[in-house]
Amino acid sequence: MNVGKSETDKAAEGLLKCRKIVSEITNFGVSQDDILQIIYLLSLELENREALESISCIVKEFRQDPFTEQKKTKLLEI
Image 1: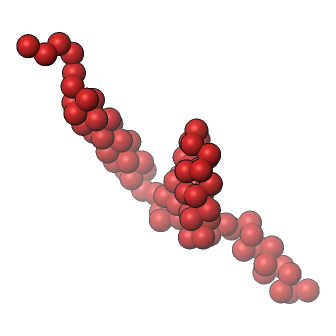
Image 2: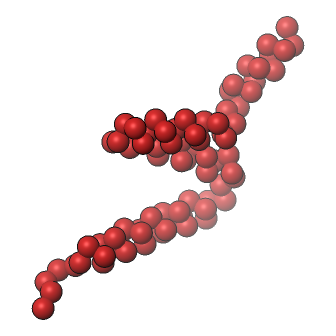
């Protein structure tokens, strides 16, 4: 007779919670750029420094920063 939840049950509940969060985010009608920004911001919340740096660096390669794009355009106009 088992008392409490097994590790598998706990893992399944965690996955379900994550899927619900993703579903809620996508229900907002976010764009691909928004999703990359959310991933970037979540990566900054990680306690594992190595994971934080790796994930944030990878996401930076793919996301478009409108502020950086404006600076590049202004520099080209000069």
